[in-house]
Image (cartoon, rainbow, N blue to C red; front, side, top):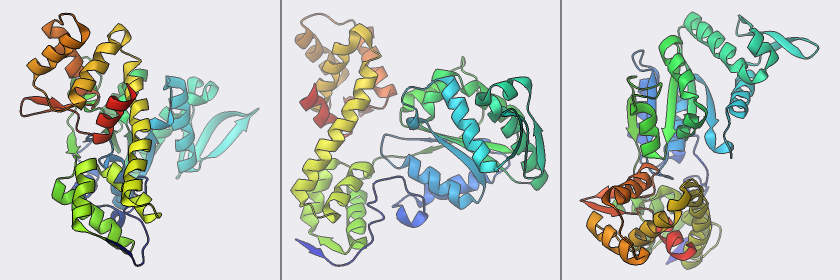
Amino acid sequence: MLTKLVGSNMIFEPKPKERRGDLFNFEEEVERIIRELHDPLTRLIVIKGPRRTGKSSILRVGLNESKLSYVLIDMREFEDVDRRSFSYELSEVLGEIIKCKRETILGRVKAVSFLGIRVELGREETTDPAFRYKAFLRGINRWAEKKNTYFVLAIDEAQEVAKINFDRYLAFVYDTLKRIKIVLTGSQIGVITNLLDNPKRPLFGRARIDINTRYLSEREAIEFLRAGFRENGLEIDENILRYVVKKLNGNAGWLTLFGWFVVKGQSVDEALDKVLELGANLVYEEFQKFLDTRGVGKRRYIEVAKILAEGPKRWKEVKTLLELRLKRRIPNNQLSKYLNELRKYGFIMKQENKYLIPDPILRYAVLTKF
């Protein structure tokens, strides 16, 4: 039964949250971010977790409530990341934030003044605006020292910075610009872990604070839906909530989208169909981008995903089924590589010695679109 009363639809707003009151069940994570941002001993914070489990929201709420100045770069804005476009974007955003007064000669910046600090631009920074961010950050660090405060450089979906070797500059910031905090988020857990724990990467060995997000438990997911609907003046039968959670698991992103459709007038079944349709298209594109980098192994990755979409499997079960489908023997090390890569990019996980696809929408997309 569904009864409409009154409401505002903030929990079910389908975008990253900016205010604590719009979050659900992330109090501990937000408090820890704020605490660590103000701790002089903390230089690097890493927020990791599966896709659509609240990383971007707790990052934004934590940044806003810290009352510190910050710049946030969302790497999803860059469809094809290259060093120059990223550097240019960072320079532009920093320039807007510090509201610099530019002194120009024939359109070429020679110096900027902001917050009482004058920054002379070097030759590279003068001739190439893409690299002004270096001068800006050095100047911001001096201002923060003077004001006894911190500035936060936050990068959402930060695993992408490895493609342009920006982690080399982040290591420089960590080691040298002591008043600038670095916050990174990543949904490709294995990739961002490699970025930080690989001895060959620049950030290796730097002390950091890890904050992990997760899927909601069944109880938490039901309460999440109940809270969102109550906020909008809707009361839904408990059995319906359990049915929805069984279909969408504890993925806060899909639950939010479902709630939004219901609030907008869709029936429960219509809303579920919409989430499956839109979600499947989204995760299909995400998975397809991964497959496009797999070369001749693309078909094998698809078959492994299809096997796991049918249900959790042990390593030996995956091997047997894969060899039956491909009608050829698969070396053990090759299968381990496929499973490890899928785990590294966050598409599958391992629980109790079984591999599985935790996202029900990805399972649906794999079974219907490949």
